[in-house]
Length: 430
Ligand code: 4AD
Ligand code: MG
Image (cartoon, rainbow, N blue to C red; front, side, top):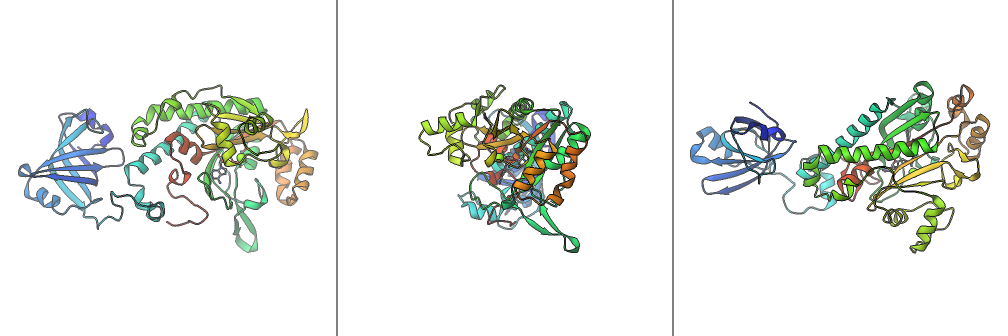
């Protein structure tokens, strides 16, 4: 019977078949120790050559790393083994003998590994990381679904900018029309919220930013809830509950992957609402006291984010940034019109901004002015202004960057490892 290695403990004493790839092999006289991976877990299969039929012995001859094979054998429980068990081999069937594998056990540089990303993802560490990514997305969607949100898919080809005109990827659309790759699904999510009240978008978003940092991709995935009849308090609560749920779900369902990643989990266990909340001016004060040269009115740089978040054990929510450094759609604070009703959430341990969001300007006249001030092409925003013409309501939402959240939870430094095929300023291969 074919089983997934993850389930092997439930088959103690049974003869099973695992189908997978050879990850590693050790020989000792007449015994061979095969480490086989099947995408769920690795398992050690112990082959005692005199016990095998000639075909199986042949299959083992010259077996190379990443050759695909089917191994049948008896399951023995062994607490020291990775999956809590090992297989005593009875039969080996070779499916494909791999060419000499380019990724060896020795250390490779990041460029080499990135050039071979299509193979690198087979490593136990990268597989664990991508499994954690899938769990983050699943847990986030599950949380929103339970809370009554409707998934609302936004287009990727769009007529205009959402997050500033400097980071737009332009595409040639049909019949000489111009299109841009979406920087955010938000504007469409706002239309969705006016139809369905509580929605979220989830999909790839694009920024032609020449930022060469460990936190920036040119293509990244964003989850963006948008809620009608809501303000800053509402999205603040939603953000801390969503992030806490995602962290706890990964801890609960993916302990083996976190172990493979050597993630220290004690700091994640304490992630629960409420998160600390400070204003942008508090943040500037804290940063200046800690030696940053930042001045009021400037955006927080990567180092400022790291310095600030290191003051807290949970993610910190920073609200009320100067409106000038934020997007055109953000609603100002009625008590202090220089400030936006917005929030950023900064992850602990130096992982930077994982969430950005705001209350949206819902007044037709004010939004018209902002579009003009920002020199945005009004014709492309007529539909967006319509949302303020027909039953406009206070509404708010945020975007959570999937790769940054995965980097934090998995404890990996660079976001390039948190997406199967990263797009970086100098890389679109493979
Ligand atoms: O703060 P941002 O730019 O906000 C928006 O796009 C809003 N329209 C979202 C909304 O209100 N619906 O981006 C949101 C998040 C950031 O906090 C960060 O986690 C992630 O998206 N992000 C990036 N991740 C990787 N690479 C990049 N270049 C990123 N830019 C933003
Ligand atoms: Mg932001």
